[in-house]
Image (cartoon, rainbow, N blue to C red; front, top):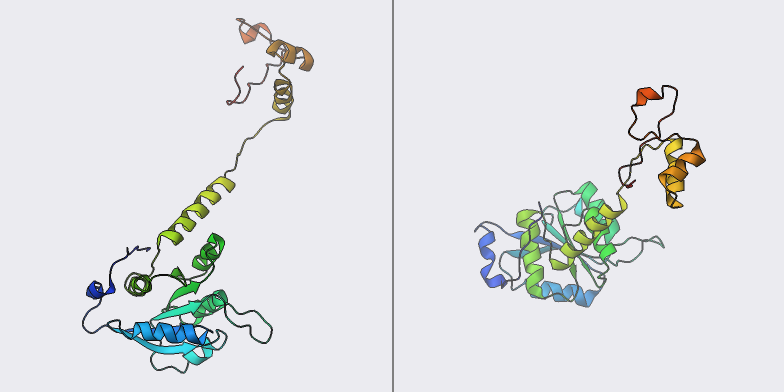
Length: 231
């Protein structure tokens, strides 16, 4: 279920959580300054507790297997260091988390705003996508959204989903018409702007006007033109 939470101050949003709720957060971000900045901001948020952090993605799954308290929500940078020359991005980590720890909700942070990135991440299991320069309030709202409802889709992600859906509708349109060889011949002549009489003459098709078919028992009637052509 996709749930959209509109921007509001986090001071008034804690009603989403019960008194016993504490959301455990994991941060996967290779930039130390940015990671420390996120932790400093989250210290001031009610019922938010950072319990896991990593500077690269390829060690996360193994590290989590030893965690007593695993994150409820993982904040993941899209661009992460490679693993011995092999790419391992936030997308790779999203797939691995989905396979090994499907209960963990994933928020992707990225400097990229390309709609194709957003669609690919959501299709592969990300529960939310935010740009890195978003307002801290929106990040808090996203944490509440994915924790409480399973997803947080802001206007940027919603627009990407709508555009992708419209694109699929356009590309998936298929015309299933069973056209005989004779009808194809007629269509070709129609495209040449020939009249019905001229088509009949070229294809040796008799035209019977106001005469019952039984008057010409051995004749071959002219095939009906497809519905989208006017005679």
